[in-house]
Image (tube, rainbow, N blue to C red):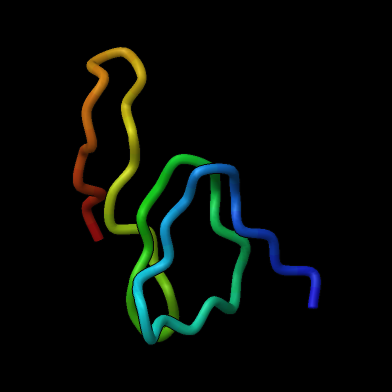
Amino acid sequence: PGVVIGKHSVVAAGSVVSQSIPSYCVCAGIPARVIKKYNFSSQSWEKVSL
């Protein structure tokens, strides 16, 4: 309860979302973590360092 998945975000199959996910990102895993974010200035997807 209280978890929000942001606008235009993608959650991989089998992921367990336990925290809110920001907009324009891709998340995966158990627990779900952000793995990519969309960069509007370069108009491309960028990997997020873990």
